[in-house]
Length: 427
Image (cartoon, rainbow, N blue to C red; front, side):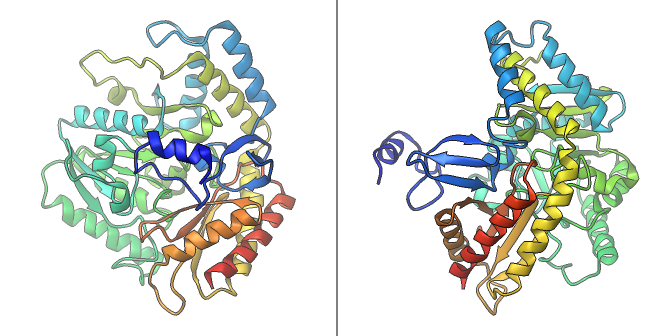
């Protein structure tokens, strides 16, 4: 155990997890690579849990942060803040939500907290519909709507949460159905559920479940849900903390794969927009956002420095068509991984879109989750010079791959080769 690891354990909670048997200290990064304290370079396919969206040490973002920090670092939302207004204007226009209002927070957890506050206040109901296998953050209210036991340490809650089918396509009671029948069955389940409850405030859903292992329903499921929700006056919250900003390649927002019934009432975002800076936020229709009848501010949400970073990062993303790059390079990467996985009895499924790819591992010859194999592949990939993540609602047996959106074809092929070798550790 290193000296830093010993010091970490002495002052940190036992539940604060670290990757790897010998935890890694990352000291600096550039582009799609990071370096550890021993000077070893790694190709980064996890980007600080999908947060380093464009590139490590992106000059445009570093310059914006430095210049803004030299002027003023903090003022709070009690004062006019030009970078905050400018970023809010851009996000409102990109959101697809009519007459949109934007409120900035410091994290995705806080963004989802705010969305829940808005929905419950607007609807005068504390009942929330959430998806099985979901994850929405670490706070008391966010944990209470998380449909993933591994990330939900208490059943106590200020909310009554009811869980809906549909977030996982290839497991559960409807897995054997075709896509159209799958959607029909999930809608029927939702209709039946609403027939037995009091009026709900909102459905919160990740278009692609992140911590749950990059699972997703067929395109159109949430549009079909929206038709049911609208009849009951129930709001739709799209949790875009991991799916936003073009990561899925095909769409700028994950909800756009389910757009037939219009945009969500509330959209939450975080992670990638700050490229490592602490930014989260909520976009909502004006009548929903303005429904609070008490004072509310954010001390650190909308900080001039983080807003400057977000503006520079968003401009770079759009000007360099990183959504298109995620579609093109992500498509190549997933095909390379599928070709590699075809020779492994331990791989149940390779899924995802754009640069958001999951590899689900099972015990060979069974459908049983294999977290030990996932841990072994994680270690082997590191040994080969590649950093990846893991997750999944079924015993953390999914490898999560989410590189910065500027990933090159050469780097995608290099990463796939390292993964091929690492997967041999799974048998």
